[in-house]
Image (cartoon, rainbow, N blue to C red; front, top):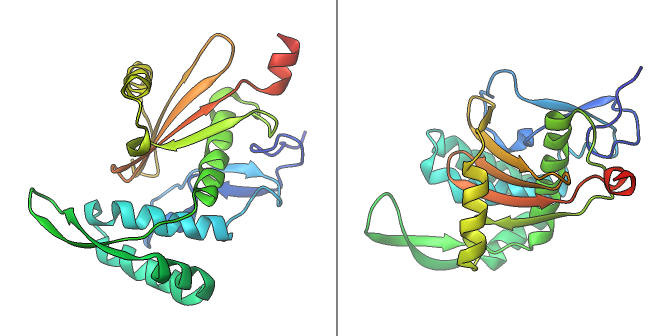
Length: 216
C-alpha cells in the first residue's frame, strides 16, 4: 500500500520533503536529515516561501551559529539569484542597534517581512510533524495558528504556552539544530514549539483533524 502525503493526507506521497526545509542549512548538511513522504504539490522545496523563511531564520539565528560566515554567504547567493526577493530585503532594511553577545548595543539592520510566507512554512512543518507523532495526517482542513514567540504580547498566554510545552520532552532532529515539543489534549488539539538553531522559537496551535471532530 502506497503511503499518502504526510502534509495533505490525500495524494500519494511519491516524493520526500525535508522537515524543516533543507534550504535553512549550509553545507555540509547534517547527517540523516529528516524527511516525510509528500506529494509533489505539497513538497515545496525551493519555493519562494522557503527562500523567504531561509532569510528570516538566517537573520534571526546567524549570530548564534558556528557557521555564521556560511549562513551569510548562503543568504547572499539566494538574494543574488532571486532578484525580486533581494529588492524586497534591501528596500525594507532599516538601521538600528542590537545587543550582540552582551550588554553593549551595536549597529544592526532590521528587515521586515510579510508574515504570510512564514506562517505557510511553519504550518507545513507542523502538519508534517503531526504525521510523525500520530502516524496519520493532520490534513489541510484542520486550522493551524502560528506566532513567533517573542511577538506574543499577552503574559498569560506566554505562561500557558511555556507550562504546556515544558511538560513534554523535546524531540531533536538534524543533529539537534531543530528541536520541537508538542502537547496534545484529550480532544486531539495540539500546541507546538519549534526551535530553530537554538535561537528562533515559533509557536503553533493546531485543531484536531477534521475527521476526528466529525467522528468524535
